[in-house]
Amino acid sequence: MALPPTKPGKIVTIGEILVDIMALERGRGFREPLNLRGPFPGGAPAIFISQVARLGHEAAIISCIGDDDFGWLNIERLKGYGVDVSAVRVHEDHVTASAFVRYREDGERDFLFNLKRSASGQIELDQPARALLAGCAHLHIMGSSLFSFHLIDEVRKSIAIVKANGATVSFDPNIRKEMMDIAEMRAGLELMLQYCDIFLPSGPELTIPTEAKSEPAAIAELLDLGVGCIVIKRAERGASYHDRTRAIDRPGYKVVEADPTGAGDCFGATFVTCLRQGLPIEDCLGYANAAGALAVSRQGGMEGISTLEEMRALMAGGG
Image 1: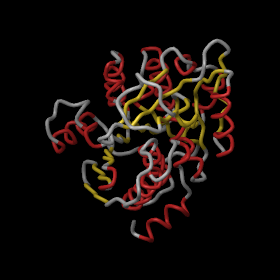
Image 2: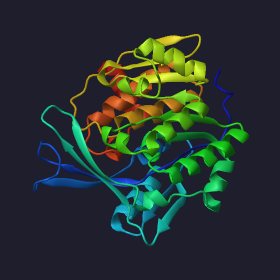
Image 3: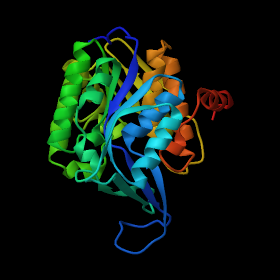
Image 4: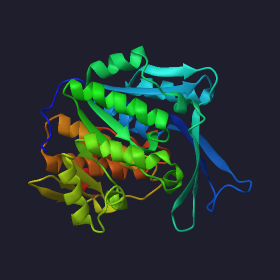
C-alpha cells in the first residue's frame, strides 16, 4: 500500500500528558530514598507534538490532565510551543500522570508509571476532540497510550474519523518492558498495524508485533499487512526506511548523551513533519536523525526538542 496523497491540515496526536521525575543516582528501581530532579513536562505524545509545532507545522493534542501543577506545567509549555490544546480536558477528580525514571549502571532505565488511574486514563473524544479530528490531516499514535481498553477504543474511533476524511496515520510502538505486562498492549498493537501508514519502531520493536525472527522477515510481514512504510530508529547508528520499492539508510550523528527520554518522539515528529512538507525520504531521515541526536544531548523530554536551524547546524558539522 502506497502512502495516500498529502492532505493539508493539522498533525494531531491523542494520548498521555505527564511529568517525568528523574533519579540523580544510578541503581535499580525505587525501593530506597534517593535524590530526584524534576518535574519535566513530557509524555511521548506531548513531546512528539511539541516537536511538530517547533518545526512550524500546525499541531494539536487530545488528552486529559488533572487540575494541578503538573498538568498546568505541561499546558503552559505546549501553548508556548504553539500547540493547540483546545482538546485537553482538565479533570477535577484525577491527577496528572507521572513517570519516575532511574538509570541502571548498564545504561538501561527503570520506569514507575502512574497512567491508568491518572487523568490520562480518562481521555475521551468529546466535542472539542472531535472538532480537531474533523480537520486533521495526519494522526499520530504512541504505543504507550494504548494502556487500557478504554484508550484503545478512543484511538479506534479517532482513526475511523480521520481515515474517513482522507488523513494518514503514523504509529510509534514506544514499548517499555514495564508496559508489556499490561494485558491490553498487544491488542492495541494489533489494532494499529491494521491502519497505520507509517510505522516507526525502535530497533527490537520491529519484530515484537510479528511472527518473524529476523529484521528482513519482519519488514516483509508488516508490508504484507498493509503498512505503507517502515522507518526503523537505530539511535546513534541512524535510521532505515523501507517500503515495497525502496530501502534507504542514513547514518546518525554522534553527541554526548545526557538523557534519551523523548529522542524517538522527536525523531518521529521530525520525519512525519518533513515528509508532509514534501522533502525527499533521504532528507526526512537526515533531519529526523539530527532531531533524535539533539534530544539525547539534553535532560528532559520536552527539553530535547529542537528547531530546523539547530538540526541543520548539527548536520553541517557531521556530528
